[in-house]
Image (tube, rainbow, N blue to C red; front, side, top):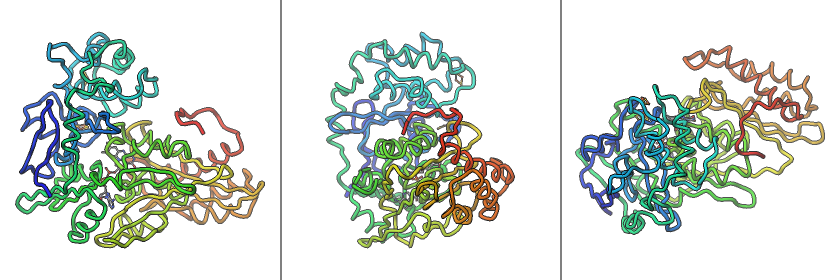
Length: 487
Ligand SMILES: Cc1cc2nc3c(=O)[nH]c(=O)nc-3n(C[C@H](O)[C@H](O)[C@H](O)COP(=O)(O)OP(=O)(O)OC[C@H]3O[C@@H](n4cnc5c(N)ncnc54)[C@H](O)[C@@H]3O)c2cc1C
Ligand code: FES
Ligand code: FES
């Protein structure tokens, strides 16, 4: 057990003993570390002005990923390298290629957003994408907003940056001389316990310790990527008295494939889970690509999305349509529950006190089943769904053997369209049958009006997405989708 949070900053190990568990990294940087290059725009993960990069050890190399420091709590830095815009300049004063290319391509005007863009591009520069495609550049920048420059010069800088050399300062093959060794030295082994007044923060490193701690503190808030929980503090101004962080538990962070299932640990980030999901379910990978931004996907987890239980959470309709189950753990006891039985009411789940989500099991269906999921939102990137539909169809010739249809944004929880499904099962998969089923959707849902969409709009979209699924299934499809993950 330790009461010290250790991370690397400016080539040295920082050791914090009495840090407020919900102090954000942005606040720490600006008010404690006097690093004010990192800016606050929205304080809710939307604008990217606060983007910093975290270095973590992966197979002996330092892997760099961009995250939003405004919703990241300081103790979660334990075991990581924190890189801010101040670190990019070389000791001789020369600029990093990302900064140099921004200068050369006129990628900045007022400059408020620029450190955030630079850090996102820095992570891209040091990713495996040595010559990033336009798709990769767009994905990298979707979480950074600029109100004055316009994106063309910034995209040009992203294309140009690889023509410039970083002098080996941050090269992946040669991690900053000491970073890998320092990261190895501060690898999280012991449970962190911080107690500040009434507040407590625990970061266990094993599943056994995590489940035991949660049994002892069933009122604690579990914290994974913090992309929901962070906003409870920065926007909701809530006091979170006891927090248990799951991100140091290696058993929860992996994603793997068995003969029959994809097994996604509850603390695996979207970015880490994607390579396991994409080959089996390209439409789900496409959906994940549009979930939040790169920064959000580098922190956020499918486990957190499911447990948060928002009716407009994006991963659940697809996972329910695919017939996924959850492995839930309470102490040493586990049980497996179909995801479509997990939601009891608006943000109410079947989790018992002290019970947590251990992993998500997604069945691997053969090629016979057709699966699709569609997200409809006001903006293509970095936006929450108005409606999200998911469909998994099993045909026996032309007859519907089974179909699972699930929508988000249509009810208080993500929910299957049971009546609509019943209308289709046993009949022929024809346009006439699908049009009858579209009408039945009215019996399954009474969607609400809110700022995202009207009830009428949601009803129409839900119907039309079902028709779209039908048209795509029979090959009658307009080429309107921008797809990175092809089936
Ligand atoms: C800018 C921005 C954009 C976003 N865009 C989208 C979007 O497009 N689509 C979308 O669906 N969501 C979006 N979100 C919401 C959020 O990113 C997701 O819900 C994310 O999956 C939450 O995961 P997390 O790991 O960050 O969860 P956290 O914030 O850490 O936790 C969320 C909830 O899950 C609980 N929890 C975490 N782990 C466990 C566990 N193992 N067992 C039980 N409970 C647990 C926590 O206690 C909390 O109640 C966005 C958020 C932001 C800030
Ligand atoms: S300040 Fe806007 S994303 Fe953090
Ligand atoms: S340069 Fe002004 S906000 Fe981007």
